[in-house]
Structure formats: structure tokens, C-alpha cells
Image (tube, rainbow, N blue to C red; front, side, top):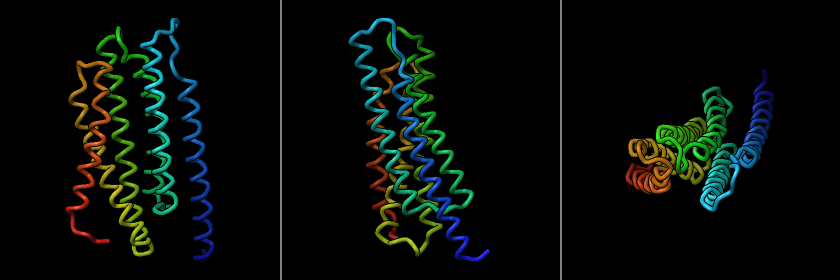
Length: 211
């Protein structure tokens, strides 16, 4: 197999995989709306929870799509480890939206506390996996692309990887504070992600520059 043919084949595969990412993200956003649980009686409290859950999930999905766009354009190399990470991350994006359904269905006022704990824990675990997998893709892509990657792009990719991996760690640690708090436990998620992003940036600044 000639190098030219192999490069063309890899380029076609990368384009098709990028299209697949768009399809999965689009389907997930559609499912987000169609799958929202509707109660027999609409109350202001439930409407507020639905709007907050929808807004958060829509913003998170769009952000993850932007991360995947950056990975596809600059860091993706069609090797089996990279492909596996790509697909695992996508599957977890869909599970993340399933987690939203669990939280909306079980982690509300009046639900059993055990159900609320399991629903919020499931969401936090899947989110931590998504963040870690995205971060790993940036690092692996940086390694595989090597000197072929623009230094500025490479540096930003490593910074993003450190930020995502630290955010994943902080979200995972936050799981220890969830039991016994029901839907209110989800309030710790945004502070955990912000703190993780800040710490990740600090760690990246302190490490020796190699790019």
C-alpha cells in the first residue's frame, strides 16, 4: 500500500468519523428534548427544574461538541487507541444525557433518597469519564502528531488536556459529597468543574514547558 493511498484513506476515515460525531451530538440534543419527563401536573418548581436541566445539558453538549471539533481538526490520528477513545467518549455523551433523565425523574423533591443518590452519582461518574476521555485524546493526539503539530496549537492542546483531566478529578472527588443530599447535591457540580479548571491551569503553568 502506497503512502499516498494510506494518507488519503486516513483522511476519508477521519472525515466520516467527524460526520458521525455530528450525528451523535445532534441525535443526543434531539433526545434531550424528547426524553424530558413530563408530569401529570405542571408546577412552577418542576418547570424550573426542567429549564435548568435542559439549559445545563444543552450548554454541556455544545461544549463537548466544540472539544471534539478541536480534537478532529488538530489532534486526531486514526490509530486504534485514538479511535477507541473517540467512540468511548461519544457513547458516554449519550449516557450523560440519559443521566439527565435519571436526575429529572428521580432526584426531585418527594423521590426516594436512595433513587436521588444513585441518579446524581451516575451523572457525576459519566461526566468525569467524558472529561477524562476528552483530555486523554488531546494528550494522545499531541504525542502522535509530534513535531508535525503547530507549536501554538500543541501548547493549547496540552493546556486543555490538563484542564479537562483536573476537572474530571474534581468531579470524581465531588461524588463523595453526594449521598444524603438528593437533588441539592448537583449544586456542587459547577463549583467542582470551575475549581478543577483553575487548578488544571495552575498545574500546566508550573510544569516545565516542553512545547
